[in-house]
Length: 502
Image: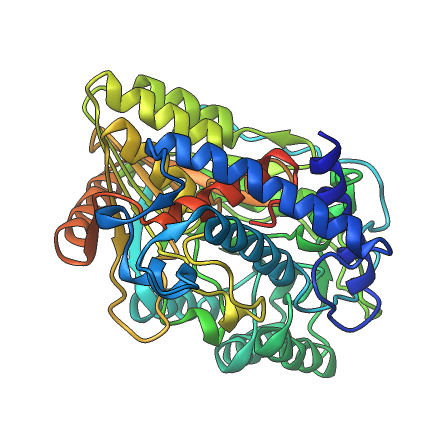
């Protein structure tokens, strides 16, 4: 336990330092020798556990258990075997790479508490309501719908988006400026980090400069309402991850697409909701707007009185959220997994929560058709975060599901730099949960997230979308390579020590 605590302290000392100075190597505490010893001790114990899991008694791994990539990454002596020392070295390097990713860019975030320390008074209605819904998949459909909604706004535009940057962000900002000039009330809430670094942060800065120059009021979400984070790393990576647009209080666009050039090529989805749930989303944003952080420009007063109208219901919809005052999504997911009778089909960008992984394994063991399609998490470089160890954190649930016998596949990108960015699960082909919420501990407890449950034609369409990707745009995983097994163990460690930044 002393070893674990020392490594955790090293991570945290590094993050604290990185917020103020240029990037530094992992293990940047004053006692470098002790840190190195602690990491080596952890690598030794984890390697012993891994060899035991593999049934290896000779001290080295060879044959089918070792891939070409494993040999290239770990075989230092060229004997086409991976020895104990080589595994220990690779584990330590993977842990260091994860830590370097976590501090790749220093951040200068503003204060995270707005004008009020009171929590929002909005709580989701747990009863599904009849709404009209429309599924939009990928950039052509999503942005056509988004611009149509913005340009058609008569009274109000409410937005809460994690990323609004680059050329697409400027195009949206121009429409917002035009609508504000026409007298439409525009309220834009943004993540206070304004991008985690690199070209993403540069693109968002261009948008905020345009908004200020054109007197379009925006605020920053008060993440401080969540209270004190467990450590500086969690503080650094905590975000407002919502992707929500509401027009005239009665039509909402929600899902997982970011409004940024680096996200446009992603395989993603949004759903347009018209009806009482759209009005509920509007009230949710209303409740948070007075608490937003004013980045030193005038903000239009809240006027309220948004109009609603009746619609022909094609779906039952309800909201679920991770908010300072209410965290409903994880419990809802666990209940739905437990209640599934026939199938659970998951398309997920980031999956790192061990409880949800265990629940899926139990569902499979009781006869439910569990299929999990995930992004292979090769890099986060386009978001300015850096190169993460391959597969982190998704390799952890992949290991558990394969161990149970369930089917797991990686998404095959159809465009350069494309990610599977959806956060969608379909139960029994008839009920779906989608939105901004990844299946990670942070998304389920500490980040601002909103998702929805939908039943009806849209759920059927989401099931069909899953089947198309599963059959035509995926590659099967039958077993993990040695390197992937080691990376999964690093994910286990970071989850246990509350160091996960996903």
